[in-house]
Length: 102
Image 1 (cartoon, rainbow, N blue to C red):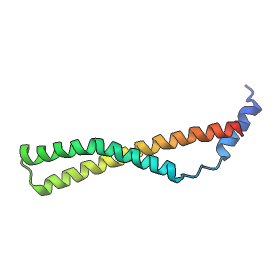
Image 2: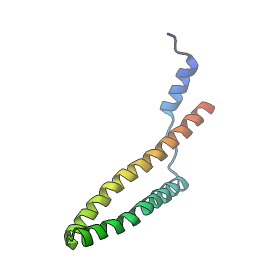
Image 3: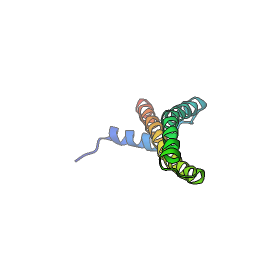
Image 4: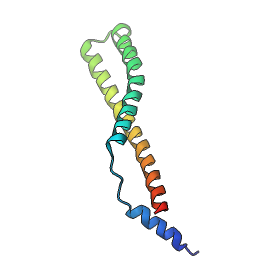
């Protein structure tokens, strides 16, 4: 099977293409979306967890704080990774389109 020279040129352009600067607008958009997603989930989750740990399970403030901090940290790492990967893939698509046009 013969690989077309056009395809080889395309792959070379994509691989050798320098990453686009993560400019202020793109960084601000990512930060706003990440913070918005966090707020939508964290606010209700916080109320639910405080109620459940203090009123229902009757845990002390120390254990409530430890459990909530652990939960929110794990959630933040997962959320931030997903949002960052969304923007990374979006940026790769833009780079591929730009490489095709040049």
